[in-house]
Length: 380
Image (tube, rainbow, N blue to C red; front, side, top):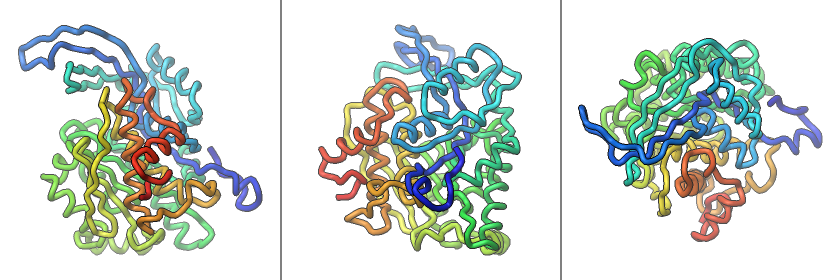
């Protein structure tokens, strides 16, 4: 998971490294006759299990796209934890920074009705007790990007953010230093995160510090008050309209997180099949989702985020291969093409059951886009 030399053939051939901080969960699926109302019931026609967890989903998705991906997580010292580790060993994801600790492994009970509607209940203390150690924090200096989900416990989230900010401060004093980009996913409704995930005040810090900020159709209104307010708040955060003097000073001290160009930082607010809104440089643009026959939308948001990281972060990193770094033909800053590429990754994932089995390879995404008249990078 560490970078190669700073120059030479090894560096040019290096695949950009992304470190994902999140759970490697076990999903227990119940195909039910209906989602029960309070005091109601349902019948499960099928019960099965699959591998999930936002952090693992994003890491595996990037691995399928041919990227170097590592996972920072914590699993339980039980049967479920051992299954998660065995599964990761079968992928290309670097699990060096996955700790094993006391407490039952994190797992989710997912009820899915015949129409695809879902209800999810998560249990297990393993990931909730995540505390990134010194080795994991040190690895962030060698990553091109660090991804974090709001399901990460607040103490861990703050530690990751502090680490990235310290690397930015170092870069401000040393031009040759190259701090990782920071990607944050505002997962789930705020009330679900209280006591186990990232707290609102820390989420606010990520809003003003992340290079890419992603929020879903449930999370965005829950945190910002409404979908419209989410767009306004994100745009204001990007342009400095809602930042305090202390925030502005911190950005100046740590070096610009927008050094990639005038439309950085970026954010996307997703609405599933209803499309998404990208906010870049304070300007909002709406995009349609691809129309596919959906089999299972679970994990589509994670697949989408991985696609954004691939195009917006890893695809532009030094040492990436020529094809992923090719400039889009329709938008010089790559906003639109990146969103389309990510939307294709998510759409393909929706055509298979469960999350990780349906995560596509790069060639599958490129074929999907070509069939719809787009270039391999999502350009028109």
